[in-house]
Amino acid sequence: MDLRRKIYDQMLQWKQKKERKALVIEGLRQIGKSYIVNKFASENYDVIYSFDFRQYETHRQAFRNNFSLDDFKESLFLLFKREFNDANAVLVFDEIGDCPDARAAIKYILSETRFDIIATGSLLGVKGFVSRESRSPSVGSNHYITMHPMDFEEFLWANNVSEAAIEKIKDAVKTYEPLDEMYHERFTTLFTHYILSGGMPEAVLTYLETHDFSKVIETNANKLKDLQGDFGRVVDSEGRVRVNEILLTRTNEVFSSIISQLAKNNAKFQYSYIKKGGRAKEYEEAIVWLENAGIVTKCVNLNDLALPLSGYAEDSTFKLYFSDIGLYVAKMGVEAASLILNGSLDSYGGYVYEGVAADVLNKAGLKLYYSDNGKSEIDFVIQDDNKVSILEVKMVKGNSKSAKAVIEGTANRHAAKCYKITAKNFSTGSYYFGLPHYALPFLIEGIVKQTSDSLTVSPGSFNL
Image (tube, rainbow, N blue to C red; front, side, top):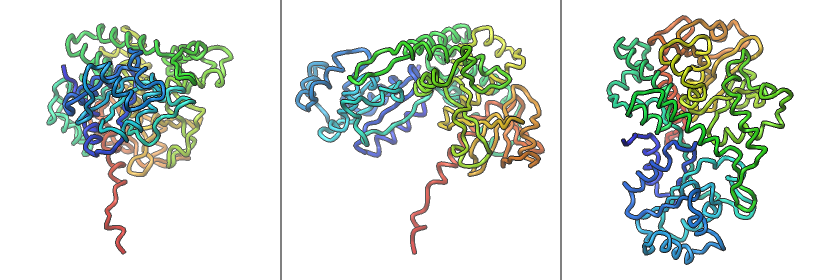
């Protein structure tokens, strides 16, 4: 089954610009990067040369030993049994982080041939995969796109939900008029199913084929094991991929603590919670590794509700969430999945739905922030129409004294809007705009688009 992905349109935009830059798609392993690149290549090019640098040593060897164009042409013939042809042709570099020499050759290939280059990488942000001492990457020759697991709208597409039905959510986000109960119940059910499956394509396909969440959870649990198989992987100064055993151990320790860390009364990440006497200097590198690999996303505390948010971030105080809600659920296990599906979660449900909000914000490309001043805590803080807005996330419903005080000005900090995300239909209250969980992705999509649009100015504004 062909899963429709939003990144395809971004790839088309890159190709239509006709810039002499390689397209580099980075993101978590097994989220469909190779699939979408191969689909795009087959639909837009006459000639395709595909390299898999993780699997084939011969593919890596094509870029070693003082890389030259003549040698490269010979390598293409030996590897693909095809005469050199760079007319409407593309070089596909899968897992380019495993071959720093290929990454260093990009600028030269682009300048000396007509090839387009599309590369993928799952560890490109990880230390060592960024560059190597002996040869640096082709600086200025790459156009980067971060790919995420499927978001909720892509999940709706996979379920053949019509654009007209999706537009009903988008319209309600603008008006806060309640949806017809039939639509509300249907979208609520689909969003619950999205929470359980998440956005890993294989898990979504398992859901579509079986509608058996035990199999979906098993699929995602296997994905977690595959991801853990990468833990501790680094590239040394000679370009060799190896496992740092200390980093491997510490990364596993951090990863194993995330579920229980989120359930503490104070959900901020604590090193001493990993093990007695644990310190930042032991585990910071492991957290950075997990974050750069796309497995977790960091939500940083703000010391004030003011813009720009990054200027008020306390980087040492943070929470860690899974980058995909389906992986979060799989880590908790089938018992927790059963509670979610049947609406039987108790107070831990609030942490799950915070994890859902983190999933939504992360997949929209936003940095995550919360605010805890010791007296009250705000779940998430965003920039909205160049003002500070807050998100309060509830499993079913509930009041939020902290949010109310912030909006009404009775606290020592202030925000322009409060969006309360619950299981209830659209509504407005005395201090908040109420949205159902399934509408949050479309709210954030609109806010992101508005910010992007505000950066485009009319050329006429420069006339004097």
